[in-house]
Length: 78
Image (cartoon, rainbow, N blue to C red; front, side, top):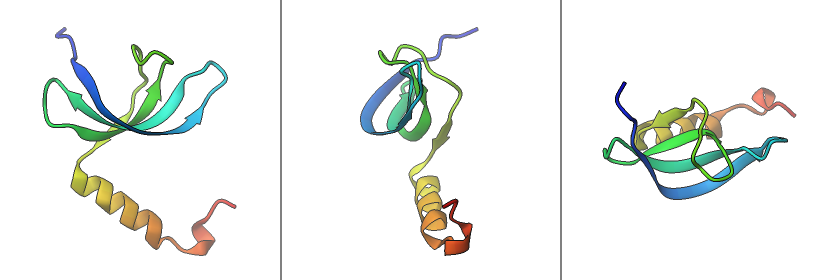
């Protein structure tokens, strides 16, 4: 199996942290030397290990933000 290369080009923020110190983060990540994409996944404290996650293009991230902003108050979890 080929090695997957990645580079976190910009750390945008931590969403949450679990008891073992892993953090769920939103970052811009370049996978296999391709253009960076928005990436949401959990990372070990030293960023050498990661969980499965999701990557989004600029257009997909914009659509996600628009969907989030357009939700009804009734859709809130609070």
